[in-house]
Image (cartoon, rainbow, N blue to C red):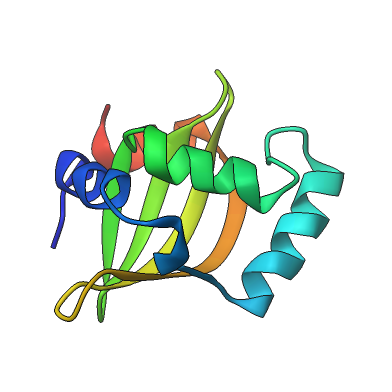
Amino acid sequence: MYNEEELFKLLSTTNKTNFEFKRHFLDRLKLRAQNSNAVPDDITEIQKILLNRCPVYVDYQGDDEYKVFYDISEKYDLVIILWLQVSSGSKIKLITVYPQPVKRRFNKNGK
Protein backbone atom coordinates (compact mmCIF):
# COMPACT_ATOMS: atom_id res chain seq x y z
CA MET A 1 0.00 0.00 0.00
CA TYR A 2 1.15 3.52 -0.80
CA ASN A 3 0.56 6.72 1.12
CA GLU A 4 0.14 10.10 -0.60
CA GLU A 5 3.86 10.90 -0.88
CA GLU A 6 4.85 7.41 -2.02
CA LEU A 7 2.15 7.32 -4.67
CA PHE A 8 3.14 10.80 -5.90
CA LYS A 9 6.79 9.70 -6.17
CA LEU A 10 5.79 6.63 -8.16
CA LEU A 11 3.46 8.54 -10.49
CA SER A 12 5.79 11.50 -11.00
CA THR A 13 8.66 9.26 -12.09
CA THR A 14 6.67 7.11 -14.49
CA ASN A 15 6.42 7.52 -18.23
CA LYS A 16 3.18 8.74 -19.84
CA THR A 17 3.11 5.54 -21.91
CA ASN A 18 2.59 3.55 -18.70
CA PHE A 19 -0.90 5.00 -18.33
CA GLU A 20 -3.76 2.97 -19.71
CA PHE A 21 -7.12 4.71 -19.93
CA LYS A 22 -9.96 2.24 -19.67
CA ARG A 23 -13.00 2.89 -21.87
CA HIS A 24 -15.11 3.49 -18.78
CA PHE A 25 -12.64 6.17 -17.66
CA LEU A 26 -12.77 7.96 -21.02
CA ASP A 27 -16.57 7.88 -21.11
CA ARG A 28 -16.88 9.17 -17.54
CA LEU A 29 -14.27 11.88 -18.10
CA LYS A 30 -16.19 13.24 -21.07
CA LEU A 31 -19.56 13.07 -19.30
CA ARG A 32 -18.38 14.51 -15.99
CA ALA A 33 -16.39 17.30 -17.63
CA GLN A 34 -19.59 18.38 -19.41
CA ASN A 35 -21.54 18.36 -16.15
CA SER A 36 -18.95 19.86 -13.80
CA ASN A 37 -16.31 22.51 -14.24
CA ALA A 38 -14.39 20.71 -11.45
CA VAL A 39 -13.38 17.93 -13.86
CA PRO A 40 -10.76 18.57 -16.56
CA ASP A 41 -12.04 17.89 -20.05
CA ASP A 42 -9.11 16.01 -21.57
CA ILE A 43 -6.62 13.25 -20.85
CA THR A 44 -3.63 15.59 -21.08
CA GLU A 45 -4.87 17.55 -18.05
CA ILE A 46 -5.44 14.32 -16.12
CA GLN A 47 -1.89 13.20 -16.94
CA LYS A 48 -0.52 16.56 -15.76
CA ILE A 49 -2.35 16.15 -12.46
CA LEU A 50 -1.07 12.60 -11.97
CA LEU A 51 2.51 13.44 -12.92
CA ASN A 52 2.84 16.82 -11.18
CA ARG A 53 0.55 17.02 -8.15
CA CYS A 54 0.71 15.19 -4.87
CA PRO A 55 -2.63 13.67 -3.85
CA VAL A 56 -4.25 15.00 -0.69
CA TYR A 57 -5.52 11.58 0.29
CA VAL A 58 -5.12 7.98 -0.87
CA ASP A 59 -7.55 5.22 0.03
CA TYR A 60 -6.35 1.67 -0.71
CA GLN A 61 -9.26 -0.34 -2.12
CA GLY A 62 -7.54 -3.74 -2.23
CA ASP A 63 -6.21 -5.78 -5.16
CA ASP A 64 -3.74 -2.99 -6.14
CA GLU A 65 -6.60 -0.53 -6.63
CA TYR A 66 -6.46 2.99 -5.18
CA LYS A 67 -8.93 5.82 -4.76
CA VAL A 68 -6.78 8.95 -5.15
CA PHE A 69 -8.00 12.41 -4.12
CA TYR A 70 -6.64 15.63 -5.65
CA ASP A 71 -7.54 19.05 -4.31
CA ILE A 72 -8.94 20.99 -7.30
CA SER A 73 -11.04 23.69 -5.65
CA GLU A 74 -12.27 24.84 -2.25
CA LYS A 75 -15.42 22.78 -2.67
CA TYR A 76 -14.34 19.74 -4.71
CA ASP A 77 -11.74 17.03 -4.88
CA LEU A 78 -11.02 15.21 -8.10
CA VAL A 79 -11.18 11.50 -7.35
CA ILE A 80 -9.39 9.08 -9.66
CA ILE A 81 -9.70 5.34 -9.22
CA LEU A 82 -6.60 3.59 -10.53
CA TRP A 83 -4.99 0.19 -10.55
CA LEU A 84 -1.22 -0.18 -10.19
CA GLN A 85 1.02 -2.97 -11.37
CA VAL A 86 4.52 -2.18 -10.13
CA SER A 87 6.23 -5.58 -9.98
CA SER A 88 7.24 -5.70 -13.66
CA GLY A 89 7.56 -2.02 -14.46
CA SER A 90 4.90 0.50 -13.67
CA LYS A 91 1.58 0.02 -15.38
CA ILE A 92 -1.25 2.28 -14.32
CA LYS A 93 -4.82 1.64 -15.39
CA LEU A 94 -7.19 4.53 -14.84
CA ILE A 95 -10.64 3.16 -14.10
CA THR A 96 -12.89 6.14 -13.38
CA VAL A 97 -12.88 9.80 -12.40
CA TYR A 98 -15.38 12.06 -10.63
CA PRO A 99 -15.68 15.21 -8.55
CA GLN A 100 -16.50 14.78 -4.89
CA PRO A 101 -17.25 17.40 -2.23
CA VAL A 102 -14.20 18.07 -0.06
CA LYS A 103 -16.26 17.56 3.08
CA ARG A 104 -16.58 13.85 2.23
CA ARG A 105 -12.78 13.51 2.34
CA PHE A 106 -12.68 15.43 5.64
CA ASN A 107 -15.12 12.91 7.06
CA LYS A 108 -12.76 10.07 6.06
CA ASN A 109 -9.37 11.27 7.22
CA GLY A 110 -10.06 14.25 9.42
CA LYS A 111 -7.74 16.49 7.39
